[in-house]
Length: 323
Image (cartoon, rainbow, N blue to C red; front, side, top):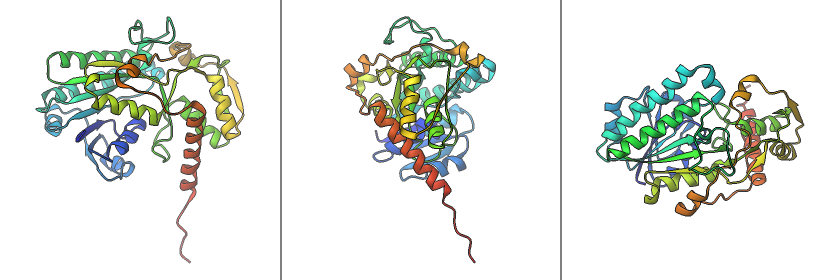
């Protein structure tokens, strides 16, 4: 990769990816707020471009000569999308249509790696969930993500770009080693709570399985999808391939932080989108791209907790007032 554009480059995944890629590539990050983005991504090799919306004309010029586009932008939250479907539609589908039109009109015909979600599968009929599992979204967020997957396929069929869809499970890890601008994901919130001495709250009995992937492993997979020609016009599940119950995850976080675990009743909005047990079948990405997660769950939680402690220590440092 020589020139890379990241849409959504100030988020949890995007900012980590930008810093990883900037070591060997010229990275352009698209952001709605260039001042905030520049502060968060003050790193050699990263250029921030303010882009309030998906302006196809301006974007297509910016994308000329770009090899790979990492398409990570979009609002998060299955629960929130069900309470405000119109906002989810605008922030995901409408934005993505303009963005992909720009990608398709770029002279370089870029390869686009799209961050989709494991939630497109809904409640699994069998485990592990492979790419040929039936698709049954339980939220507007998941339905809109699935819709955008089809957008990528249609543009690719026209020969104007190529794509890789990554159906990502539950990523976690410190946001580039600094205090994140917003909380990302259930496990990140739990680890941060433990580091700060707050109780670890889980809904119900916490027996349902989840597939957690550490951010460093996720970045490995995304980079493979961006560079390996075999990944072109393919859809991959990206996860650890292993199931950890929410209860067990809480016990590991408690072990690493000394926090107490509390069980609380399920909020209504969360019950509606709960998928039950989920394990991502990652055999396809293993076989075709050679992807293997490098971090065990305990190791990854320990590294994340250490990162949050380091971030908290930096935040507590204040300049001394002159006498």
